[in-house]
Length: 247
Picture 1 (cartoon, rainbow, N blue to C red):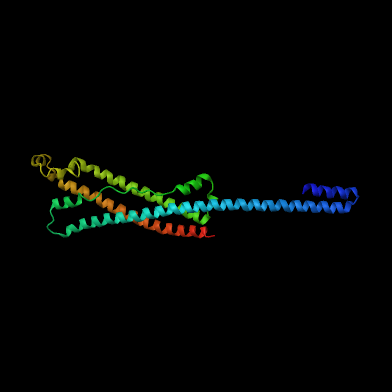
Picture 2 (picture 1 turned 120 degrees about the horizontal axis):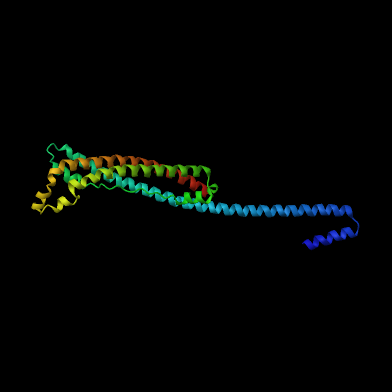
């Protein structure tokens, strides 16, 4: 093609057709410019397609993370609800006006004292932030994701704080009870039962258990409320992402 244009220019110059040559030269320049612009447009389109594809991949990964977090929140709420139901059943024992200390101990000592660790998926949003590719994500979605992560971090810190306080109270049980399984092991050991004389510590043991489970009750109720709010926010973000994927 270049050789063809060169031949035409040479022919016009040899025939001393300067006016036509200039017009032709201008036309040729215009064609070249148009070709360059078209090439740039094609290149820009290709780059845009690549970025769109990468954004779509991020959106899919975000949906996976959010689905996992939503499921975890649901399962944790269900688990905490069961714990709260068991604790409520225990407190209802006090409706019996002739309740014995050993009955209180037998019920409260089997309630779980350990809390559930909270973990959330933030791999994709952290990857976006670290790679500098946050611009690929809709600003509305990005802001909501950042707010969600902040909400998750606060929930974890609150749970860890209350859990550490509760664990500090639990440690006071050891000198009085030994372990939660020791009383059962002493059922067939009258001499050891008399030696350890755990019954004399029942009041202090029950007080400690009461403090632990009341602390745990308040903590888990707060966490359940935060997780319920989190589920709603996750649903909103997922709806926005699905809308972007359909574009």
